[in-house]
Amino acid sequence: MIRTLALASVLAIVLSIGVLSRDAETARSSTSPVLHAGQFPGGARVLLTPDQRREADAVGGFVQTPLSLLRVERPMHYGEYKWNDEGVPTGRISIRVDLRTQLLSVFRGGHEIGTAVVLYGADTKETPLGKFPILWKGKNHRSSLYDAPMPYTLRLTGDGVAIHGSNVRWGAATHGCIGVPTEFASHLFAEARVGDPVVILRSSGNV
Amino acid sequence: MGISRLRKWHLGAASVAGLAMLAGVPTVVASVSNQGFTVPGASSAVKLMAMLDGRSPGERTKGELAATKVKTSAAAVRSADPAAQPRERALGKIVQPKQPASPQASNVASPVEASAIIPTPTLGEVLAPRSTGMVPGSGGAVLPPVIGGGGGGGGTPGSPGSPGTGETPPTTPGTPDTPPVEGTPIVPGIPETPPPGELPPVIIVPPPSGGGNPTPETPVTPGIDQPPEVVTAVPEPGTWMMLLLGFGMIGRAMRSRPRRRGVKVQGA
Image (cartoon, rainbow over all chains, first blue to last red; front, top):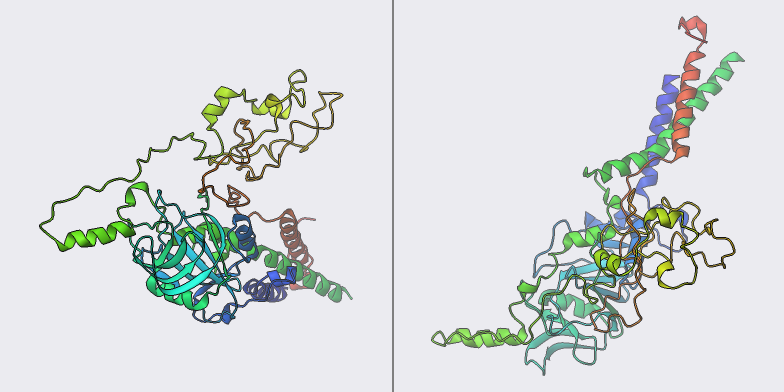
């Protein structure tokens, strides 16, 4: 009697571990892909649960419902960035910039492949909010308004707002552009194509 | 014959107990991870915005801005000449500190302001309105209650507060079909989940005008201003029942052991 009970409970625990380690979304929805943690080597990625995906849709700013994020354990410093696209299928990218958290996230196929701390426009020269397609790419652009280098420029608006490499540090702001670390800008420049959407928003902070 | 029936009892009890444990494991894991233990692979219980906020160096404060692109080039020029006189940095624009109740800062007047302008019905009145006071369609006083999304404690008098959401109060006969005291008004940007156990007095706020924020820094985040509150995991009643039934069956199986083993069965 006890043996059968013990056997049944061990079986139940093994089954439950098996179920939990798999993405439960596959059982409920036919549209989302089957994701396994082993698909992305090195534990560099956090797969999002269905609740987190719903939260992402509610919060907004994600062009496509995100499926995974890069694993970032501590707060990032100014000038710090992460870029990792191992295991992520190729495709078009989308960019999300949150001015409140001063972060930029690059997604490809729903998986985050890069994130960086950004500089954005000063209060007198605010960065506009909204969804902007990349209009133009320029590797060694120089600002005609301000006579300043803008390496790896991804132009977003007609009046000069762009994402470009810059010296991201505390206490600095731009005249409306989004400044990212120059190395990160080079990765982003290689991936981005004209027409890719960039969403700039300021999320509310009541988490 | 008796033995095979006993075997069936054993298997039944074991399977029910196993199922109860199976159902219980996810809730245990979720509750443990919610309490802050670092269970490996338990980032599923963390909110997405919390994960994104955890990476952030924080919001940019007003005093932080010391330089812009133009100023850095000027500073470089200045630093190249050590004998140069120190220059004051001219402010391009004097920025007044934002008033807490400025219309730009939030779409919603602060509770103090709102109560001064508009009589706010107490929660009791909202739930059981006076027949004399409620004249639907009479304008400002009987707008659907709307809670400002700015404050952290705001929430609609939703599900736990007003039973029978949307039912017209019976004390107003002959009213047209616009129940003024609906439990959950649909206002874009206002959350629908009230904070647990807390229902602040209703604040009536006129809906934001279409161009209420004409400046370009209007936040365009769609959807909810306040994310849903964190609720600790509680097993479903069905799960509890399964667990108790399983234990009951185990007990019954243990009672009905064959006497020849010498186990004394006590009680009925």
